[in-house]
Amino acid sequence: MTMEEYGPSNVESPRTDESTEAIRDQMLRLLPRLRRFCIALTGSTADGDDLVQDTVERALKNLHSWEPGSRLDNWLFRIAKNRFVDGRRAARRHGVVAVEAPDEAARVFTDGERFAESRLTLKAVNVALGNLPQEQREAVVLVLIDGVSYRDAADLLNIPIGTLTSRISRARTALAAVLES
Image (cartoon, rainbow, N blue to C red; front, side):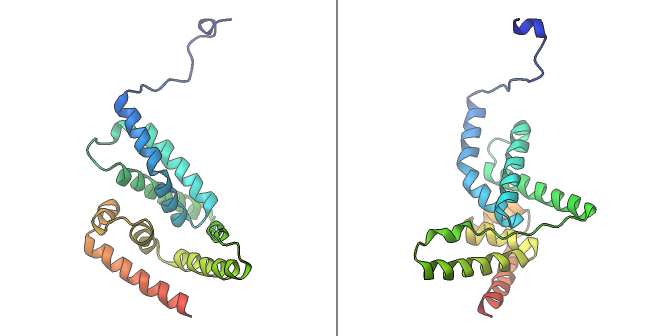
C-alpha cells in the first residue's frame, strides 16, 4: 500500500527555512548552559534534564513567537523558569515535593582522599544552593555559575539590576554562613 491509500499523515512536517535552522543551531549551542540552569533550579540532574527537554520542546513549538533580534538565550531561560514554576505549583497542588542533589561533578578526581573531600564539599554546596530561596538560586546560577552579566541576568529574570545585586549578595552571605559552619 502506498501512503496515499492510508490517507493524510497525522504528523506534520515542520516548515524549515534557513533562519529556522540557524535558530535551531543556536539552541543546540545553548543546551549546556540551559542544562546547568535547569539542574540548579530543580536540584536534580534527572529533573533538570526533564526540564531541558520540556523547555526545548516548548521553544520549538513556539518558535514563531520568538522575536528575531532578541536574545535567544534569554527566551529559552525564561521558558525554563516558567516551566519550572508551573511544575512546582502543580506539585504543590498534588502534594509532591522532590529533592535530590546532583553529585556527578565530584567524579572528576581519581585520588581517593581528594575525591572524598571534593564530593563532601560539592554535596554541601549543592545542599546550601538548594536551600536558597528560588529567586536567589536563579541569580546565583546565572551570574556566579554560568557567568551571565548582571545586566543580562536582570533582563532575563525581568527584575531591576539592583534587585539582582541584592539577591546575589544575600545568597553569598547565606552560602558562606552554611559552608563555614
